[in-house]
Amino acid sequence: MNSIRTYILLLFLALGLQKVQSQSYHFKTSGFSVLEKNERGKWGEWSNLNLVNLSVVLDTNKHRVVVYSQEIQLFSILDYIEREENDTDITYSFVCKDNDGRECKLSIITRKKQDYRKQLYINYDDHIIVYNIFTV
Image (cartoon, rainbow, N blue to C red):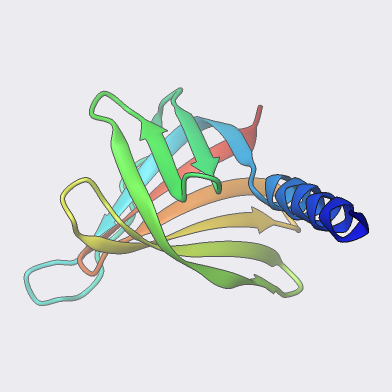
């Protein structure tokens, strides 16, 4: 009888701890810019910052990032990369697949020396999209 109670208690603790680790983070965007490679494979220049107000959700329970743009951008998280920190940035990165099955790397970077401004980078082999984001 005691072992059944212990088992049930351990089961509830395990489920409770799993729930704590799985969270959903909500952001809004304030602008975005794009960087593309040219025909010779060299990076060009960042486009002008375009103002845009979109919702972004990082859902670690469903292992995905969703950017609610005119065409919804769904990124399935394949791997969580270890958090990186240096004097200027705190970076959380994820290896993902987008709606079209293309692999990319998403990074949420907090700029320590810029009033802790946050940015979402979506890195492909041939282009990078950056969104300025803030927590809601």
